[in-house]
Image (cartoon, rainbow, N blue to C red):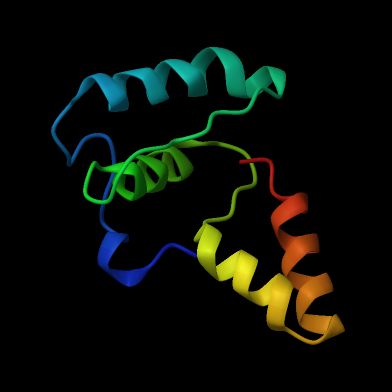
Length: 95
């Protein structure tokens, strides 16, 4: 799944419920199954990574965690194999 080690134990049950986590749970129940997208935006320290990890762990389908900066860095600086592999892996995941 690509979840960073420090986030491995996080689930919606182990973190404090917030309006953001409630919205993500609603998204998973209603919108994700219909192929809809959810973008998490905000400054550093607002809980985006925590929320994304919890969502990925709660998702019953195929999913992958990728830091946007890591993906952009690989795509822009990697060799062809790395670029192609990174994009293919990111595109293939349902969540």
